[in-house]
Length: 313
Ligand code: MLT
Ligand code: MN
Ligand code: ZN
Image (cartoon, rainbow, N blue to C red):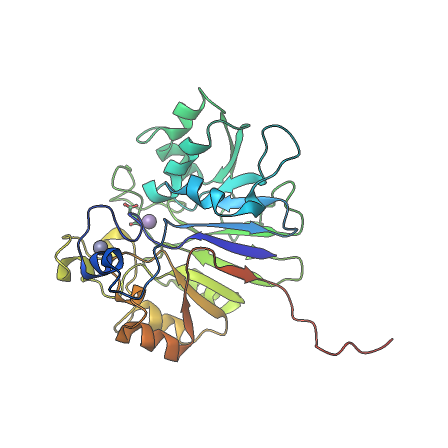
């Protein structure tokens, strides 16, 4: 099984179009050692031919263009993307659906809560009925049994309800419901698993069990501190108000990750986050803890390592 990081930034991307914070300005001016990043999305495949897109970011067309493995040429109009899973109904994870309207019906896997948001307050599904149409597949919430996707043989998905926030336009914004936000435990045929959770507000018992079980974590690294947006003078919202647990400090994400055994990669990085600066102290702290920062184009190979020397039969 292979995981392809298509976009590793939070909503707005990096640099953000209207932002002059030290990171965005430094990247634009070439004075900062950092990589530009598009908005949060991954693709997963077991065979390298059939792919599931997990989240459809506003940058999806550029992301597809950058990855020939997502193209297909069996017929005059074709794609290697067989289905789309959404982890929430946030703008940065869903607006890209509109960019995929020229194709066959979109096979979209998400919870009822996400489907409701995308049928009502931000009616992307309704709009798309006039183009390619959407075929909605409800995902069962763990501990219910995992779900599979036709043509993605050998991959099982567990939708894990996680503490987070529905988007500002959702009727659930102030009244969280299970299914507003999910993490995905993505399990290969050999049992190895990736836990993907780009939005995570708190580590409850269910999430803690996922952190302990997974072999790979691709996890919310949006903000370094809870007051990062305020400190940088770019906003008034705190990380937890937006559904993200900050990395640093007591009770932060890094503390929760210190007990893990998995290979750990942070993603959904906001453009204000100091870890984007490869020369920052914060980035060095991650390096010293063996924690990686996802970048666009990163490939994660999920398979049991064969021993270097095969024993003759
Ligand atoms: C979030 O996760 O809070 C989003 O990145 C916000 C957005 O897309 O505007
Ligand atoms: Mn987001
Ligand atoms: Zn910025």
